[in-house]
Length: 419
Image (tube, rainbow, N blue to C red; front, side):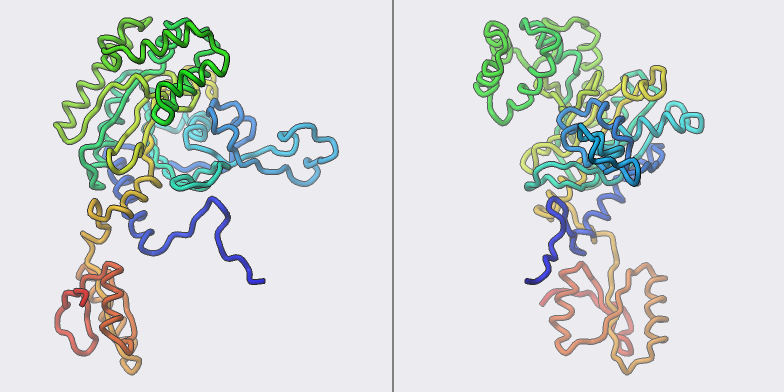
């Protein structure tokens, strides 16, 4: 039986053409964020298991890859729970590690601190299209700023990255977790039921309003509260900030959302749209204020999201530290770009040239010519002339090479075109 060379289920090998897209997109995102003053950080992929378990990560807490204790600490016979066997886990997002990172290094960091964190995260979920167990997240966060200017800045900076990648007419939906909670409580649900109701409500785009109603009733929630909830969602003005004020316990929450939306749309100048969406939930339990999500219409349902999480960092530090973050869905964006090459060409600004030589040529002179071409702004790939030169050059065109140079023959770069 032949050895199975497939990668571990839920992970993926990336071909050179895929890596060209990934490298280019990551460079755009990173350069954009750095140009706005965000500082690149790095933190370990592993965290203490108790920190991960207590992080209010919603459904992600059931998806943690746990790491067995080692040596004498691993006692299988006396273990009663899973956590008796594990003392560490792989991070499932970058927000929990950032909170610990800030607590450990805050005396060395600027205030407010603008963090840029791009790295792998891991989730032990069922693999499917668009969902891997190992994937990249691209986060920017502002710690130490309690004003809504932080939300405005994050929305604007993330939008600039989206525009530079090549996306147009995308939409950023925004809500507030406090307002979402007010909506649920106004219908007669108990405070301790709010999170469970929101989990069901978050499925509305998949199961519809009738599905939400059926599931709430199936879970045993009060029928009159469910009817009021459905009636509220069916209201003609549902989705407007004016209607949101009718159930808001604090009208300033609505006013702040209006301020964020108005300022962000002014900055968008018609290139993209920011709008209020009272049905936006976001799954993580650590969100405490505004939450937002990017939709790209015909390309994908969501390619990024984030929100304010004022309590998480404070638990690590021992004092209140306001925090808000925005994450671009790197993997989903790369999938979209692979399926729609008209959006983005990673080689558009590159001068890629192939230098063709014969085995009888002086290799030192070949390398010197390659260096000369590099000094003139080319990315140079040297290759021995094949038996079928036409097919060899056609394959290079497919790989994004736009020029060729025949060693000992050419006097200037020749534009490559597939024949």
